[in-house]
Length: 285
Image (cartoon, rainbow, N blue to C red; front, side, top):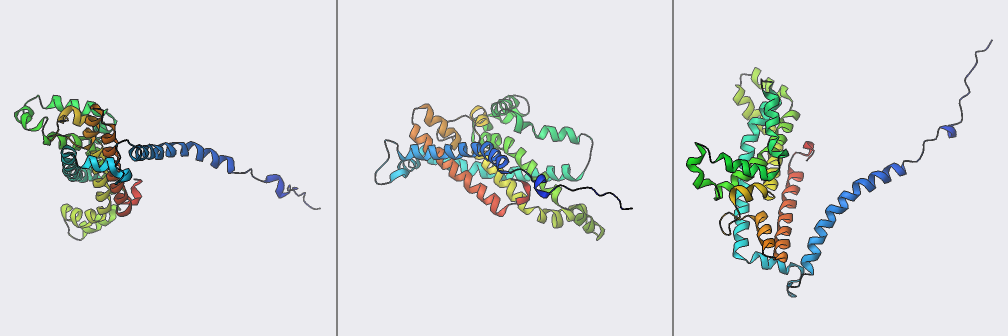
């Protein structure tokens, strides 16, 4: 007696529907944001190219070159380059030990420390600047407040308070991806914890450190709220590129504001390309 067999339907009856609608929906939803981003940049370029004061000899670059010739904007570019570079170095300097501790060790208060480090990211920028201003009214900070508040050090400190938080997140993710067994092998071979960290862990974290530095530099370049409150926007003193845009807008010089904005865009794109080319591509940045 033969066993009954199941009649399998033809393959045509199990044909899966087309995936085209799914990808169309993804493309429309995600592409809308991308189009808006590209539109922002193209709008700035178009406005600069069609500005009334565009020099015929220089073409679309006329307003940007005119802005670059202004002494106060030259000063803001110089101060921006210096302050952002110092901020990036300081951010990596503190991000390496903090990121390493959060990645490798479980200690009391770790979760609280992790939450505190995210405060500059989630707080409104103006609140960060206001908090810095209030902090320097208390002892012992008030002893040096005249040398910091509304001075160049305030520019660096305001940028650092926000940029360092992004650098810490990057370095923690970097150390999470480094195999701890390499460090353990170095310890079994007679290295101290400091020697294993310096000779094994840091070299492996080199690309992550570069990514953290470039991210901190780019974030510092675009900082505005804390600078306006804590450092001010004094011409030829505490003026950086972000506050230059604000000052030019406040006097109705829209062409110069747009030109400076394009300068910031070019600088930001440059550091982002560096981060993606020579940085750690595994950081999701």
